[in-house]
Length: 245
Image 1 (tube, rainbow, N blue to C red):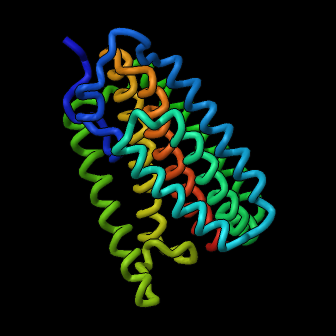
Image 2 (spheres, rainbow, N blue to C red):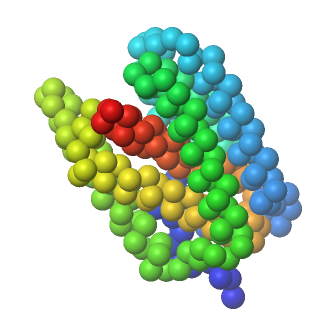
């Protein structure tokens, strides 16, 4: 019996039904292949981010954001297109993140470097902990992370709709350095990080079940979504901490 349980991940693009009807006897998905696809996606994302880091072009920023969102939706419903959509998604998200990172770095010099190092450190640490068996994604663990991720998503949606009226939730402001605001950001960073554990488990199950080769790209896509979320939340947290000075 597989040690993987029914609820796969709080990440919406990596749900328990993703690998259903996706089993292939030939040309199967592997963990090594998924790692390689993830590395390629991150290389494209970082490269695009580097090119757009030295300037803030709102048209480019918004265009990359909308384009990335559309491609994410297409990838979610057309997983077999992942080998094409995921690299493009990585480039678009990189272009958006470059502009966002430049804005943060203009406010607090060096914050982007710290955010990148923390993101990579968390990724490596959790991967080692997962592979070593120190963190085991039990059913209750998965349910808790899934519920917490859903709750955070609701807060994001409320803040998004409040933006149409020119207001926002104080908890989300990078200028709000209150203990409650900082505490909220710390909780979000922890939840985002723990989603990585569920993503590792999800990808491992896909390899065990012999999913088609294109699912390596889809697995990389799901991991990329979580890493982008984690990086942005670390940036927000560091900005709040720096605003206290």
